[in-house]
Image (cartoon, rainbow, N blue to C red; front, side):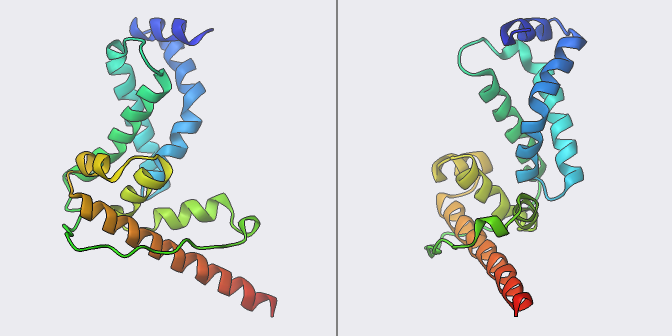
Amino acid sequence: MNLKKLISLCKKQDRKAQEEVYRTFSGKFFILCLKYASSYEQAKDCLQDGFIKIFQNIHQFKGSGSFEGWMTRIIINTALKEYHNKPTFLRIEEAYTAIPEVEFEEEDMSLEFLIQIIQELPDRYRLVFNLYTMDGYTHQEISEMLNISIGTSKSNLSRARLKLKEKIECCEKNKMEKRL
């Protein structure tokens, strides 16, 4: 069944169409949720809450633009809502220090390891890192989404990169020591 027909049926609360949309997009959106969640369980909750919001608000999708993009925005906003009422961010107005990119042997790093070290970042670092690096938002957009200053966004990104660099270098060092 084509996507336009599925959307039309979902607007009529057709459960089979909703199930088809869920099956089609849940894998991709679960990975998106994992990027923003601090645990696997939190990502599952985010995915479920996100799809509930998608189906509750599907009548607002007018067909202009990408349906997947519209859903992605709902999933990201659902993930971020978890942090809106928490004192997640420290307000930082100081200049940030650019962190050099870390180089590592890609074949030695599993996707599971990379997801794990990203999830281990403090919330404020993980959110900004994912929004900027993985999803391509600007610091201006991030500051508006998270209600923080642009300087705080830049600082948190810099600190996230530093922490990730340290973890990757530690992993690389451990691998080198095991080889000796």
